[in-house]
Amino acid sequence: MQKWEYKLTVSEIAKETSLREYLQKQLLIPKHLIFSLRTNERVLVNNKYLPMNFAIKNGYEIHLTFVEDDFSLPVQNLIPDSSIKPDILYEDADLLVVNKPSGFKTHPNQPGETNTLLNFCEAYLNQTNQHAFMIHRLDQFTSGAIIVGKNPAVVPILVRLIKDKVIHRNYLAWTEGIITSPTGTIDKPIGFDPNDKRKRKIDGIKPLKAKTDYMVQCTTDNNSLVELSLHTGRTHQLRVHLASIGHPIVGDPLYNPNSDNDDMLLHSWKLTLIRPYYMDRIEIKSPLPDSFKTFM
Image 1 (cartoon, rainbow, N blue to C red):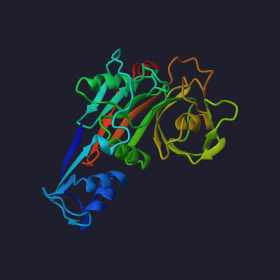
Image 2: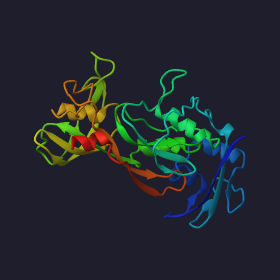
Image 3: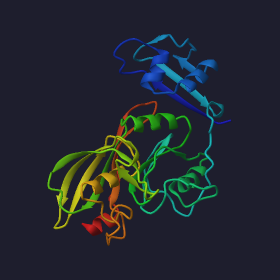
């Protein structure tokens, strides 16, 4: 049975806190995993098993051990596909940050499906008896930095960090037309498009709050290069929001169908990564694809 161990030194605690509170609020470990750690005495403080209400301090050593039985999906059923080697921007014992090429799906949607980013990562990780785990996704025609987990112990923490916008993502996009305001915020709810199940729509069916910040980086005669930052993470949010202000993304097949550009010019450019358990911060940038350079 596989196991995953973490040896940590407690730091940056402003006041005395219990072991349970540290695991739950500082490390963001879900309650069901804390229960497993406690029940099976797989959490040690200074090499001793102590009760969850024990007060810990800065400098204490914490040793956590997770096993496959702690997780409902210790391995995701991905078929390895070695036809393309993933372009890895960052790797450690727990995760990858991969430069996703445009045109490939993040994950398979059908049983037996291959030729997606996660299939490529599964083949890469299988070489060292590891597996790929989905954390978040990018649209098929969006390129750039994306996080892939290497074990189930980091998945819920990474998902939480992304949901709470602690892990921050910045995008670059070429849009149609000149955006006259150098900065701005698009705050419009997004729902389903009743006329096309592939699409989303401002104030569509079952709308949810959606908010995007933008900053114009440069302009040409007919286009703007903008940096985009998400406050929320709705499906197609950047694409729908830019189209809603009359500046759809160049090459967007759904929201800018009249564009004559072959590639959708939306790129996940910068990722501020928080590593699970260690909670340190790393900034990772993804180089612009050739389609961006050619357009410029």
